[in-house]
Length: 347
Ligand code: PEP
Ligand code: MN
Image 1 (cartoon, rainbow, N blue to C red):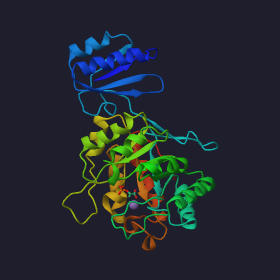
Image 2: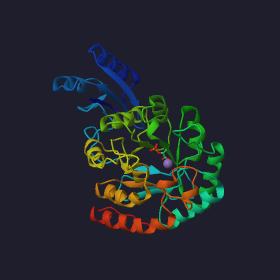
Image 3: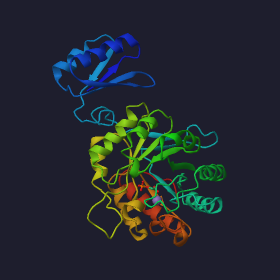
Image 4: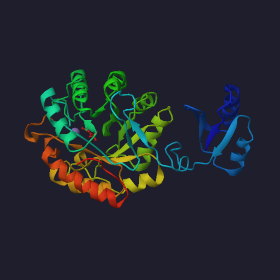
C-alpha cells in the first residue's frame, strides 16, 4: 500500500506512521515528493489495515497496491505520466513524452567525432525529430571495441545541441559519472546491461533529469518495473521505459523485440514506454517494420540508430538506418499514430 501524507504532516506524524508500520512487521520507504511525502509499504494489503492507517494523524489517504512495484503501478496512479524534457534549457521549447505526441529519438550509436555527429543531427532535425541520441560512454561487449569518447563526447553533444536545438539523450554508465553526464544530457539513458545496477538506479532517483530506462535483455516485465521503482522511490518521477529486445533462442536477429511488453506495461504502469527496434533487431532492414509494430502496439515513441556511413560506424553499423530512410519511416509513424489518436509533428 501507499500511505499519502497530508501536505501539512510534520516529521513527527511521519515517524509515528513509520514506527507503527515496522511494529506491524512490514517494511516501508519514505518518498519525499515536491508537495507531500509518501510512505510505500511492502505487503499489508488488507482493508482493515488500510482503514487503520487512514485514522492516523497526518495521513491523507491510503492507496492499496497489490503489485510489488508500488509507485510505478497503475493502481497508485491511474492517469498516464507525461515526462517533460528540456524545461531547463532556455531558448528551446520543451517537449513531453507520454502525452498525445509521439517522439522519435534518433542518432548514432556512439559519438564518433564532431563533424559526423553534427551531420547526422542535422538530418535527424530535418526529418522532424526533437531528440538526438549518441553515446559518449559506451558499454561494449568486448573490451577491445571502441569505448566512446567519454567527456570529449559530451562536449561534442553540447556543441551539436547549441547548433541544432535538439535535446540530448546519452547514456550514463556509472554513479561517478552522473554529475558530468547530467550537465550535458536532457535525458539520461540507462542501458540494458545496467538495468539491474541498483546503486546507479538509486542515485538516478536523486537527480532532476528524466531517465530513459532500457529493459534488461534478460529481465521480465516485473523486474523491469521494479528497476523503475528504484528510481521513483528515490524521488525522481520522470522515468521513460524502453523495450529494446530480450534474449531468446533466435539467432537471425540480435535480440527479440517483445511487442507484448508495450501493452502489458501500459496496463500495469502509468509510465511512458518507447521501443528501440535498432538494438531489438540488430538488422537495419527490420528496423522500420518493427518500429511501426511498436507504435501500433501503443508505444509513446521510438529510439532509432541513424548513421550517415554505417559501413564505417565505430559501433552498431549493421543496425543503423541511413538518414535518407528516416522521412518515409516517420510518415508511416505519423499515419499509424493518427489511427490511435497520436500525433507526430515532424516530416
Ligand atoms: C545503445 O543505446 O547504444 C545501447 C548500448 O543500448 P542497449 O543498452 O539497449 O544495448
Ligand atoms: Mn548502439
